[in-house]
Every structure is written in structure tokens, then in C-alpha cells.
Length: 612
Ligand SMILES: Nc1ncnc2c1ncn2[C@@H]1O[C@H](COP(=O)(O)OP(=O)(O)OP(=O)(O)O)[C@@H](O)[C@H]1O
Image (tube, rainbow, N blue to C red; front, top):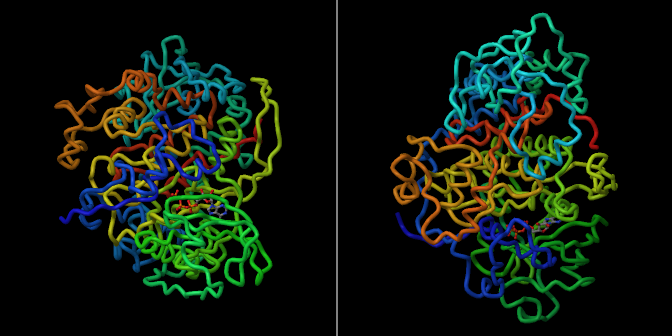
């Protein structure tokens, strides 16, 4: 296959966003030297995002990428209607085989007994990382314990056994109170000897007492909700029209009558020189710079026609960014055509034109990004209720995108904008310090500059490093599931305040995954591209450290906590979120949960009480 040099905005921005430079707010997550951006604009992309070989055709992808799009599309229609005009065609007719498949994946967890959740809510004896410790403080635990004679309590769907830390034993079939434990449950929970209590027949459990912040939506008990699959099934929706894809966008040129030349309004690197309070065409007035990315600058403007504020992304006047922006426009047009009322919270296209050789994309104006807010809050994690809200909205947006056959590829906190950054300060009752709490958790997904139609050309490397899925690192081809992995990384970041995989190097990244998620499956490693296989030893372990790995990096990797340690089962919301994350952080993309399946997960069927 022909060699090309391609770059993705996402991968570039992942190393260090120029926007952050612009705001003079370097990110904590970056442990390495900051790139020299002047150098970058002159010489091109950092090595990390240079793609040396084209990816295999997406159709040759080793997994059934249609599962994510097609099953969710069917779910979009309620999952009950005949629908043939989708990627999977006949498979979805007559009720939707994929929906059944999705339900089958979700079912085991839904069917778990409340007892197992109760047992899983026993406290972990592992040390808890600072941020997680912060979160778990104040979560009362009333001593429910599992009747397991061993040091491990096994709750697993078998979905991700390769990533777990201990073997399953069929002997763990009862829990406290003699309640049965399904052998096909969802999570692995560390369980120490001292947590063991003999079964107490006929005892009564009050689940709400376990975690007062978790209140069931209805008067049903949590246990009933857990076993009641209907509680989490999506409501039947009216039939939607099939998704339409915009094939071509013609960008109208707005003439420039000012008599100025490019030297007057362009910077050397092709970025537009932003000057506040100047006219930008006869319709818009530039008010201020909102952000700067690889593709261009985003400015806040006033629209003289609608008399509203808006955001305009002014693409750099360099051919490759111009080309890329045409794809972004196609994606944005496809989104607005299929969701004119913006129910799915993806940025809405309002206008587009070319002015002074810059493609300009006009969208609604939003507030800070989730990352900006996190940073302004000294990286204090978001409250559990807000994490749940962000996660739910994100999965909804991404399910919608996948139904449109689109992969976002660059999901990260910087690309999730808040509708409002209004907040109030609260003193944490347990830790004593003051933190900002958002008043409104509504968000909107932005930056479709790297979004890719699943049936079109795929760059080999996509996603910002920290949010990059293993199949991308291993050169196995990628599709919808890579977005799900990114959401997993994002959720953990909201929970701890720190990026999960703080690295800029492939083998280190894989070693981190092994520590946090679990060992790679040998058969999975065997499917990796040949050069990537060299990053593993004969036993299938990531080869790390390398001879030139700095000692401090090795120490950092060794200090990483497992998912189970991060999400200590001190309350029900942690138990449920951990279970969801275990289904997200599945190495094999074909077995990873889909966005629509995630929305059916029990984690989203509870109302978590107000923060703090
Ligand atoms: N509609 C909007 N309202 C408010 N701010 C916005 C809006 N769109 C973008 N921004 C700000 O501008 C920044 C850059 O936007 P965007 O991510 O679309 O540009 P990009 O060049 O594609 O960036 P990247 O290099 O990350 O791909 C965002 O991080 C955000 O802070």
C-alpha cells in the first residue's frame, strides 16, 4: 500500500494543544517537555502523528464494525422495528438480530442478583489513589460482606476475563445471606479474608443504606431494579427516517472588498490574524479568540443577521487543512440534517463560507470545555452525579454518530463543551477544601475535524494519544469501538481528575494498559500488525521498560493502580461504573460494549443524589 504522510489534528493536539499554550495553561497530564510550536508550524507535525503507511481498507477490518453502528441504529428505532436499510441489512429485519445480540451482552449483568451487588459493595482493602480516595470519602459502608472463603470474589460476565486479575471459581456461588451468585456476573472485586462473613439466612438488606447518595428512580428497591431488565430497556420510540449522508459540500465564496492582501490578515503559518472588534465579512463581527487548534482558530462573533453570538472556526489557509475542513463540513452537515433539533448534542452547523481564502465554519456558541473547567477547579474530580450525566450525554451523542456511520475519533475533555460554566463554590464536608460545582451539566460535542465515515478512507493513526484505543496502537484497523475506548478514558479522568494514560510512547502505553486493565490476550496480540507484535515478548507481555526508558517513567508506570483500585467498591455507583468500564476497556474491539448498549447499563438507571 502506498506510503503517505498524514496527520490528524487529534493526535497533534494530544501532545500539547496550542490552545492551551495560547491560554498559558499547560496541562498537568503532560510529563514531557512541551513542544516548540513555532517550530511545529514551520516544520510540520510531531513524529507521533506521522503516518507512514495507509491503513487497510475499513472493510477489511478484523472485527465486525457494523455491530456498533447497526445495532445502535436499530436501538435508535426502539430496537423493535423492522429495518433493513442499514449496514447490516437483513440481519436487522424482524426485530433486529443485533439488538438481541446487544441485549444478550447486557443481560447477564441485568440478571445478577442484588446480593452480588451488595457483596461487591464491600470495601476494598487496597490503597486508594488520592483522587479516588477523595471521592470515596464520606461514602458510608455498613459492613455487607460476601460469603466467600477465598481472597477473591468473582463477579463476571466473562466479557473481559483476560483483563482481570484473578481466576474465576465456580465455588463462589453464594453470597452473604445465602443469596445465589450467578457465575456469569460482571465485575471482579478484590476481597480479603477479613471481609468474609458466614452466610446469614433470612437477614434483610436495605440497599439504600449502603449508599445514601444513590436513590432508586422509583419506589422499587435497587435490588429489584438490578434484576428487572425492563427498567433499563430503552423506551420504544417512533420510527425515525433513515440516516442521510452528505456527499459533497460547495463552499460559497464571500468577496473581500477591503483591498487587503494575505500578508495583512494571515500569519506565517496560515492562521488568520484575529483582531477583536473587526468586521469579518459584512455579516459577522469578531469579538474575541475562543481557542486555537491544528485546523484553525475559533473566534466568538456577533451575527448582524440573527443578532446572536456565534462561534466561527477560521480554517488555516493551507491546502491540507482546507481539504480536511471540507470533510468536517460534510460531517457537520450530515449531523444537522439528521438531528435538526440537536437532540443528540453534537455541535450544529449554522453557516459556512470562504473568506480571504479561509474556509469558515459557523456554529452555536458554547462555554468552556470540560477540561477547562477541570483545570480551573485545580483538577478536583467531578461529583459522581455530574460524571454520570456527562457519560450519559456522551454515549447518547456517540450512539447517534455511530448510527450515522460516523466515528468521531477524537473524544477528549477538550472537545466537550459546557453549555454554561456557571457554578457555585462548596466546601467539601469531608476534606474541608472549597471546590467549584457546575450548576448545569449540559454539554455539546465538538471538533469533527477528524471524524470519519466508516466506509471511507481511514488514517492509520487517529485519536489523541491518551484516549487512543489498543487496536489503533497495534495497527489492527479501527472503527466505532475506538470512540468507546476514548469515552472510557474520559470517564476515568472525570473521576480522578487526571488523564488515565499519561504517556507519549507506544510500549509504555501498552504497559500502562496491562497494569490498569489487565494482561493482553495472546490471541489478540497475534492479530496485531507485525511491527506492533514486536512490542510484546513471547509470553504476550508488553515489553517494558526498554533499555532507554527513563527510571522515573518506569516508577510512574509501576505506581499505577488497577481499575478495581481506582473504583474502590465503597458505594453502589462505583460498583456499577466499574462494571461499565470493564465492558468498555475490553481489548478486542469486537467485544467492546457499544454506545447504545452502554446506555442500557444499570449505571445509568440510577439517580445519584446531588453532589456533596
Ligand atoms: N462552538 C464553540 N463555542 C465555544 N468555543 C469553541 C467552539 N468551538 C470550538 N471552541 C474552542 O476552540 C477550541 C478549538 O476548537 P476545535 O477543537 O474545533 O479546533 P481544532 O483546530 O479542530 O482543534 P484540534 O487541534 O484539537 O483538533 C476548542 O477546544 C474550544 O475551546
